[in-house]
Amino acid sequence: MSVADSPAARLQALFEGHRLTPTQRRIAHSMVRRAADVPFLSSVELAELAGVSQPSVTRFAVALGFDGYPALRRHLREVAPAEPVAEAGSSNEYQQAVEAEIANLRHLAEALADPRPVRRAGGLLAASRPLPVLGLRAAAAQAQGFVYFAAKVHPDVRFLGEGGTMLQDRIDAAVRAGATALLCFALPRHPREVVDTLDYARRAGLTVVTVADSAFAPVAKVSDLLLPAAVGTGLAFDTACSPMLLGRVLLEAMCDDLPEAQSRLEEFDAKAAARGLFVD
Image 1 (cartoon, rainbow, N blue to C red):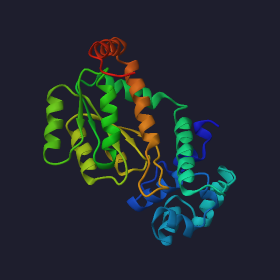
Image 2: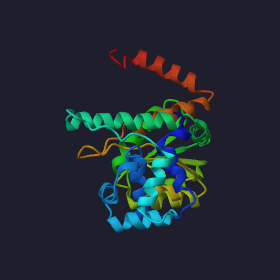
Image 3: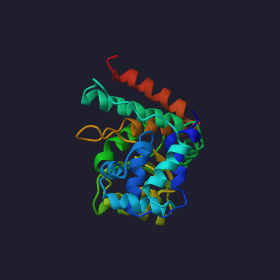
Image 4: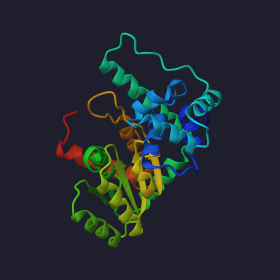
């Protein structure tokens, strides 16, 4: 199945061109995350999935141009015929969480069938000297992991992992030093400060590349290039295997636009060996 034929892609195409309220974006986000199941859900079930009221689901369907939710569901069954996802059966809750993450990774693989957005992002990140990388709260680990590896090949990577009044100062300093782009990792729950910071970064002249859990995340409106990668929600705390992998894919794309990347890696390996840095 190509990315254009995937249930998630067909749903996103349905939502394009519509001005959705925050509640409606939340419904759209939930539908994309459960794209294979949505044609078989009642309005009450979709409302529970999205954490909204049943009338909100009805208003959402009308906003998309349908007479109501039953008409939207009929449309989804016609354009995205598929069997509902099988019940987990004997799988326990931990196995179900892993299976859900595997499904998220499959969706990411489908999206990467068109590599142009990631390649464009890699070029933007490689060209920015310095390169600020933002990640607050739940997204801090993803951003810090990217920075750790990116610093081996990029001459100046700056981790922005703490909020507060200094954050905009650090963006100003990066712009004065020559930065042209900012990479952001944004995961739920989305801090208001991240949205405000990305808005500030754009007004400062930076091109904002964002890895987020959905194309309908609150950061979408303040991002120049958004790359979605779903998170798992089956456990008490969200799991972010897909955003992490997408970050590594971005690293690969960035290396492709850094001619000195290989020599920098070889230099690091030589110094690490001389220092006895690793035991393996």
